[in-house]
Image (cartoon, rainbow, N blue to C red; front, side, top):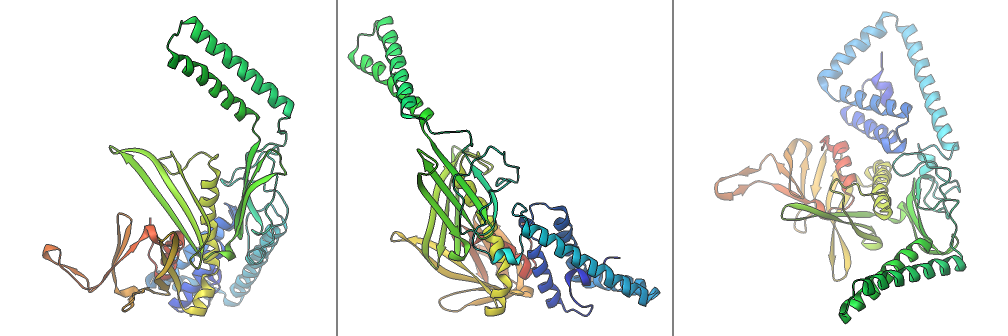
Length: 433
């Protein structure tokens, strides 16, 4: 028989608050993004969920306690010994698994010790950002130094690829020019083109096109991106592996807020593209800003759009970083805080807007804060890009008149979006699809 109390590491007399805290700690510890689908830790995560759902429900908990007492009262001393031995074996197995992951640089699971390590061990990743095994021919021309243990990576460069020599470049450009002259001559003289404008067009167009193709073929420009336990990085080389023309390494300890912006564009109700932006801030100061666009209606562009993907996946690990620090923030301040981010006078501004604590959400207002305790919340719903929370005193009357309390959250401006929804679930018990 499973012992849900042991799984959550709490006593049989644990209060609801103790059960919730134990669940938060365990749910974060075995979070899916920490183990990349390892069977053992998937099982542990599901066990934690099962234990919490049983013990937090008074009816289910009472039924479990009856079965628990019947099971252990049959032969109390023997069952007690077996339970303790089973618990100790499970703890040893868990410790061994964590040790295995810790000392093997290519295992994606990480623990508290990994979280405390900001220096990046110089081992190339074995999996890409999508969980697939990397080909042995992939070349990482530079490794990050300050994002902690490297979890995944992506590179456009192969080990066999070498920069083109000057002689090779000269030959390719010469061939391109000769072919362009031949094409222009064939069109102009073969079709008897007499217009000066068209002669100019057919003289320049083939040359420009073939020079562009030749330049693309001789260009040596590649990207490396990395996701680590404590940050992410991107490097660009051009001309040679050693010539790094642009780079950034961002450690999560340098960040307080992430604003992610997605704008889906349509024309005549037809999808025309998606604009995106990732703004990384520390107390309102800009650390990094990445803007771009893609053509994937599903929000999953091609892998070559590496700046989108490294920031998209970094958001996931940034959320896990915040979850790892959630209990510490709750112990120190009693709540976690979320900001609204705006852009005014060529700079980003950060305004505290929400506080989440155990069993409550509080809206910060210049006049007076308003707190919703768990039992005060009538409903939570969304409309467009806004989330609305209604107090049980809220009433909607005729002709758009309202009474009571209702607060909106503009999600487009809310920092740490993913963390907000996850912590809302863990602290107030609401789940979002």
